[in-house]
Image (cartoon, rainbow, N blue to C red; front, side, top):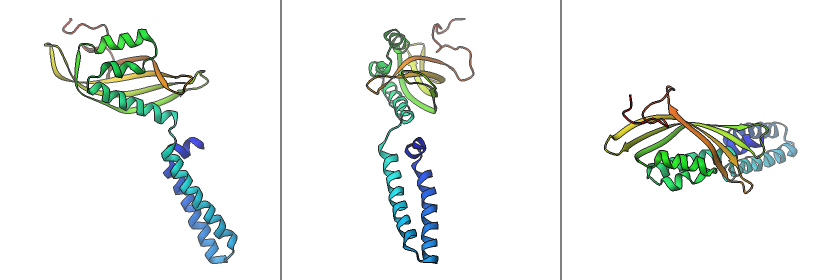
Length: 188
C-alpha cells in the first residue's frame, strides 16, 4: 500500500475523493456531524497523500531517474561521469572501453522497466530499457542511428545509493551487430 501511495498518489487520492464525496452526501442527508468530521479527516488524508507522493522517492523512481540522467550524460559525451554509477572497476573499464571511441549525437532511454530482485541482500534490481542513440565511430560510421536493448543490474550500497554491478546491450532483435561488444566494425 505504501508503494501505491508514493508512486501513484493520484490513484489513491481519487479513491479518497470518492469517499469524501460519499461522506459529504451522507452528512447532507442525515445531518450528523460525525460524517462531516470524517470528511474533514479524509480531506487531510488526500492532501497528505499528494504531498507524500511528490516528496518521497522510491527505489524504483530513483533507478528510473538514474537511467535518464545517465542517458543525458551519454548524449553530451560525458563518458567518465556516465560510467561513474558502475560499482565494479572491471565493468566500469569495460563500459569506458566500449564508449571511448564513440561520439554521441543523441541518446534516449525508453520503456524502462524496473524489477526488484526478491530476497537479495543487499537489495538488487534488474532494469531493462530501450536505448535509442545516434552516434559516430571515427571515420567509418557517421551519425548512425542504433536501437539497443540494455539490461542493467543495480545493487544498493550501504549509504542508500544504487550502483550498476553488471550490464549488457544487444540489438532489439537479438543476435549481434557492428555495435555489439567484441565485434569489429566491418568484419565479415
